[in-house]
Structures are given as C-alpha cells and as structure tokens.
Length: 265
Image (tube, rainbow, N blue to C red; front, top):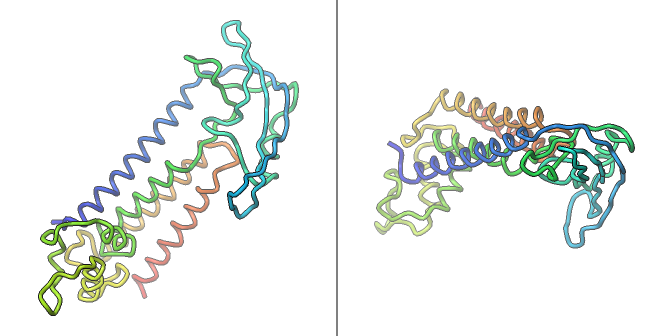
C-alpha cells in the first residue's frame, strides 16, 4: 500500500497527465474542426519590436511574420492576419521568422482555415505551442516514474513540499534521539534513503510498488512516452516549432540516461 505522501505524488502525476492530454486534445479538435477555403495573399511583411526588461538568450528584439490575406465565405469577403493557429509566431531569431514568410508571396493563392461558426476567425498554418500541453504531460510522466519507483530527486522535492500530519508521515521514519519527530520533513526522506541504501532511486525501498529491473522498465516506458509526446507534436505542428519541445526531448534523454547509468554502475 502506498504511503500518504507517495499517494499524493501519484495523484499529482495523474492530474498533470489528465490536464495536458485534455488540453492538447481540445486544442487539436478545435484546430481540425475549422473549414478550408482558398484565399489570396495581399501583403507579406516582417514586423519588428523590442521587449524592454525581458531578458532572453537571443536578445530582446522580436520578429513577427505579418501576412494579410483575403478569402470569401458564403459570398462575403473577409480579411485575415493570423498566420498560425492559436498564437502569433513571435521569435527573437530573424531567420526563423523569415522561413515562415518564405512560404507566402503577394498575390499567390493560399489555403485558409476558418471557424464555420465565426468565419472571421481564420489561420494559415496549423502550428501549436508545445507549452503548456507537452510540458504538463512530460512532467506528469516524470513524476509518475518517481511515484512508483524507489525515491529519486523529483519525488524527494515533491514530498518535502507536501505538508502532512505528523501521524501521516512515512512508517519508515524514526524519531530523533530525543524521541521527537524532526521538524524538517526532508530529514525524514534523507534518513529513509540512508537506511535503504537508495540515494538516487537505485536501491531497495519497501514503500515503492515497482523496484529492481521493473523500475528500469517503467522509467523506459515513461521516457519513451515523453519522447512520443514530442514526436507527436512535431508531426501535427507546422514549423517553426516551439523550442520547448526540443528542450523537453534533451532533458528526457539526459534524465533517463543518468538514471540508467546509476542503475548499472
């Protein structure tokens, strides 16, 4: 039976997964529910502006592809300016914005997708933001692996932030030399890890429902699922892709590689 703290961590992981999957499914259904028609590109320009007080690695000057197009629905002409579904393509890398503009030329025909219930709401490229949908799913998978396997740093951090009654603390914890429960909950986690020989999730843990080689299998499945989230995003979203997706893939591979190394070393 899971301890109260590990149960809360498991519920939090499931909540993150449910929120990410639900939000992503809703956005995808909305985007694919738009009708398609043929429009005409009127203007193609590059907008530029500076963000004051917003520190970024690439600088504080941002570029936005500005494409104006017209299209007709039921005999009425509409003018659209949204290039991508859901959000503008803002980037502080001019070449990324230029690649978007390279897909359009003034006077050329273009496929326009519009909301049948609100024809004035339209877009050209089905581009999604990886944040927050993908990040919620990736974090949920990471925390799920921690909640079911011997303790790792993610679960240690979560457990230390969840206030529970003294009587609800892990049965593995012991009192201090003066027979009092430590005030700092992280001391309980440190002591438990020391007693079980589990400093980074590699040893035995009586409270973990999945251990040994099955813990490696579970972590592999969680890692592959997280990478699958990134792959699915790249498959359905038009470039330029959200850089958060690439960062998530790197973090996932690095994290699982570190875990696997500690398991076999």
